[in-house]
Image (cartoon, rainbow, N blue to C red):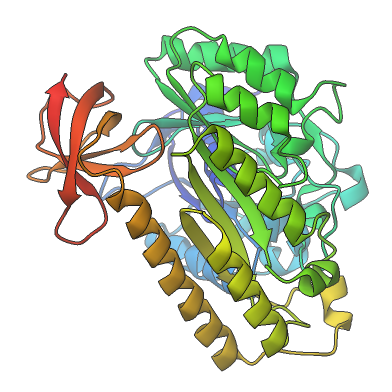
Length: 440
């Protein structure tokens, strides 16, 4: 039994870096502490507990994590500081040595927080608990409400792919997942809480089913039957795991939105081989063509990494031409970062920081061009938008089914409501289409 008297009247602050999966997991930690009597700090208050959920996808991410820890330690003197997440799993000793840190929890331990908290007494030196990657086996469920209207449901964790540039399999462990029955029950709880939209999150969600003998397609069909949930979005899915049956199901689905996020990483077949990706450009192009053939107005976001080892100028130009040829909506562009222990470090050709920046800027400009064209061709159409609570004095925003950001006049009763609008022209900063309400 947990001695909850230790936590009564305690106040906590939470800081999350990185992906939507991290935000979902932080929310679960906050719920655990809340149930033990801990409340979230209010503005101006000092926290008794600081929880930092870290990212380690790049060296810059590591640096931001250290900065965040230092900032919280300074702002909340005497607080018990807990650090978890990918940086904590990969470099537990380094994190434990940061001044003010008391407890470091790896991927296997963060779901069992109370086993390690003790009496919340400050330590002279941080204590680290992190299992070896091969021992990370537990799937810790989490579902959180974002800052706006969407909920994030963790359906899978870990990765078996071991791409040459990536440390995620070492930070998150092997692929594992919850059962469909458990995840459907969580979706029902979201519906009971008034939630209308759920984003499915994970590390490699298309690989769902490794630990339960089920499939991601089975999960999609089961979630689609949950009454009360009006919208689902698939956060990201590998192109080789995005099957035609999934695409065709989304096209006729009750609640799965015409919105895909697919990591490409490079448009050069030579670079894809160096990355140890499990597809080539012809397969990727075929997936985009399939989506467009059955869902012409789908939003398609694509991840791209620039400046990886081995990406010669010729290979980058090949990649640029290929990406330019794709009928996609938006690019999420990342600059390659060297990660210790990865196989990519064995590749000789190194891209300079200046060249990485130049390539990134070219792809970002291409992305802006594609996104604007996608928005522009929807002007004058009607759409259903899920509106979000606005800041005081600001207009309301929301997203259409196919993820076009919309701006309209604010109304106090329209938060988390699905309304029919007519899409107009771009707003002043070009980040959304103005809309007039047709039916609220």
